[in-house]
Image (cartoon, rainbow, N blue to C red; front, side, top):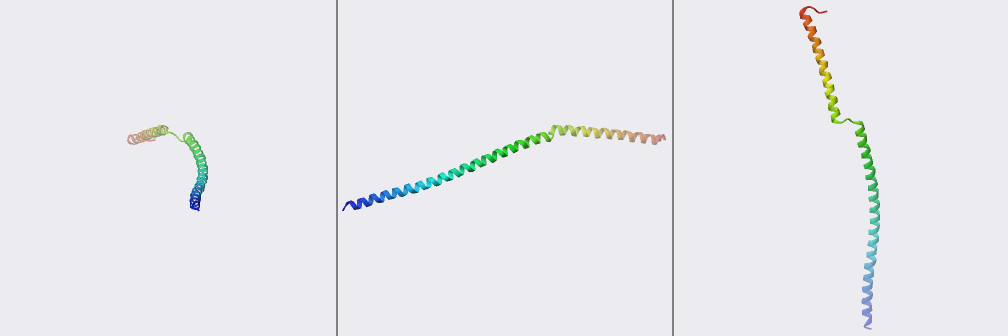
Length: 108
């Protein structure tokens, strides 16, 4: 009858090992499911990132096509300022001629 305690100890050890393996396989299954979910999330994120990248490239092309450069804007500003200055000079000379005629008495 001395073999009963040995058998009981062996059954206990096997049960503990079986329980450990069962619990470990459950955790492995859960981890595998989480891993698959993470892969799907990563695929979705990668697709969204690619879509955003395409939209950004399209926006950059649109901006390059529609907006003027700083150099072009500065050149245009200089031309407008020069035209305004020439117009001011013309007005000044017109008023100077009118004023000098008024002093000379030769006003029309």
